[in-house]
Image 1 (cartoon, rainbow, N blue to C red):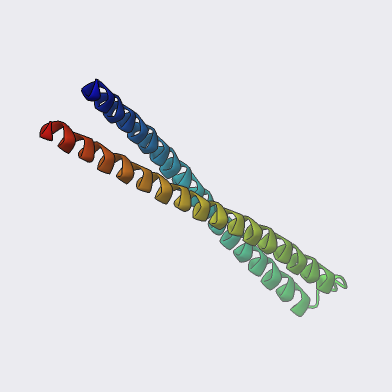
Image 2 (cartoon, one colour; image 1 turned 60 degrees about the horizontal axis):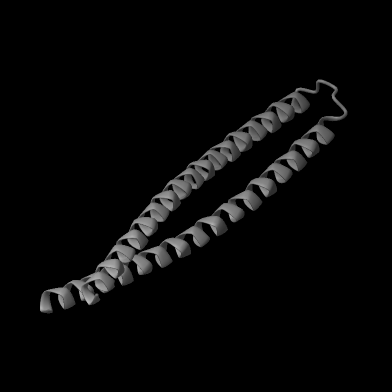
Length: 132
């Protein structure tokens, strides 16, 4: 009867480890997709910044040539406001992604601890089995 109970405990430990490993794999995949998304956001922000700089330069060139555009300053101002809005939006999203990554890393650390406890328990039961 004791042997059966130990066998059940070893099996339960193995199942727990399998679940933890599956969860770790899922967390790694999620983290990878978040990192990819963040990379895309940074690239998008850089492209938008470059575009705004180019538009400002074009508007300043037109203004310097005396093309008679009275609303050049308002266009530059609108471009600047748009840049600020886009930048702030991307910063907020970046902060949310960083928080999500931090939470996933905490869950991953807990899963690793659970696996280690399962391994320790399995090793202990195996030593007891050998001893018996």
